[in-house]
Image (cartoon, rainbow, N blue to C red):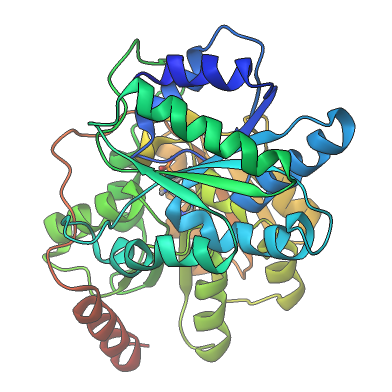
Length: 376
Ligand SMILES: Cc1ncc(C[n+]2csc(CCOP(=O)(O)OP(=O)(O)O)c2C)c(N)n1
């Protein structure tokens, strides 16, 4: 199936707004949205619940339903505005969801996707959202029929979901862009690891930042037991790090975040500042993109995390733009009290042969807890 064709159909059906958070299963679809030349207004929102918010507002202003695309990991973020606002027992606001299905039962996937994948259809049933599943064998005629069915549901003020299996959308012209930043993320992460005292507790964010840190730490130190990889729960790494920092005042804790993840639950920043943990250090690796799932730009490319952190009340915040400047991290963690934030701009590059954690998630958790217990 071609994303461009589906988008034309949506426009034809009267959709004029599409909002969402990018997903690897929907990479071709997301590229299609970026390169689409029709009139659909597109937003990459900070989280999936925010996309539902835009869909609701757009409907209120135009009486036209909007489309929300996302990975199934984002279902948690849509539940609240869906169940307590859009549902027919409240306002009855039509929304069409396009949902990438990671962790489909029977298809091998990473630990963070297994349970979410298993309960995906069940969750939509529970939320009273009828759905159809599509895959690479779905024909254009079958897709038309699904959209006709969806249209009937939406006309009643209800929501409908199209659940998309891996490999459904064909490759078309890819969307390419450049953020102009010279430093490579993987090299930056290696340098950060060398700057930090060995065994500093690190909480790393969802996606390739954790995968690159894992490989870099194994290469530099022969292990990674001091790193807790937030493989799922995108946007929550900083609060996990805060939870550790509050319980272990004797330990310095570093959160290595992505800009997309930091945006997703940005209320964490003023909250961390209010808690004022002296042993907390926050590093935001900023490529202005959701690089891990296909390098789609975030909807907030102008965001200046150092200034946001200062305004939120962090004790100090700074942008580090060269490899030499990364020395500030080593000095800062030894000499400065937290909470401190360092924002590091990086390019959109990543290695095609980047690996994934080899141990089970549980083993990594146990190693991390043991390391935390016996260090400091
Ligand atoms: C709630 C949720 N929505 C979407 C995803 C899919 N996802 C995984 S990593 C990622 C991008 C993360 O972007 P950023 O934090 O900027 O890090 P980068 O990949 O650019 O290094 C996305 C959207 C997810 N895991 N969870």
